[in-house]
Length: 219
Image 1 (cartoon, rainbow, N blue to C red):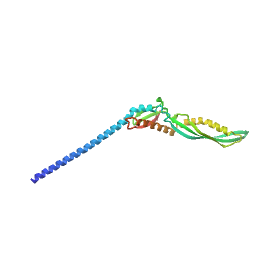
Image 2 (image 1 turned 45 degrees about the vertical axis):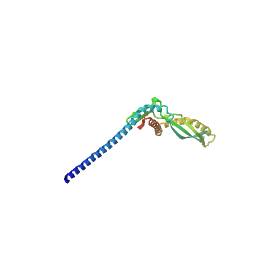
Image 3 (image 1 turned 90 degrees about the vertical axis):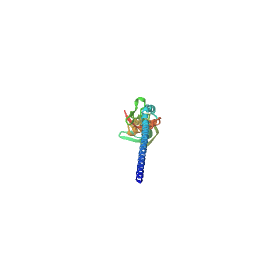
Image 4 (image 1 turned 135 degrees about the vertical axis):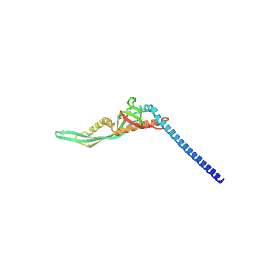
């Protein structure tokens, strides 16, 4: 009898352990399945948000159009010009003076954002904005114009020379600004403002949770 009871008890314990093992395995599988389902739902949500932006690229291009002045990268530089003024008093006798002017020049650089001059398109891994290279988008402004006579000569007109330099300042900064537009630092600044505007616009659109990498390329 004791032997039979022992066998029955062992069988009951084995059955209980098997049941516990199966339940534990099922529970673990259930947890894994739930975790996998949650991960898939999250990934699907991310993918939906990621691909949503492709339907908004046209709207993004329209938003960029007409924003040339708002997206302008403004750069202020202190400029200065020194000039030697000469006057021939007698054959072989020359008098010289020196005059200098200083001023602040504000330059505005940006891209041509008229509709037919640029494009916004999806590419593998992100968004690409194809534009022409930056340019001056406004006439440079000259401010805080001042002059100083550094040295005076005999019968030399340093004041007239300074006035002429001041009058030429506007033309000089225009030429200077056109050259500056090709500087890597200016191009990088313009690109940054353009990318930030487009990214912010897309992030604010309903259903967009992720905006991919945006690059600027030149035509």
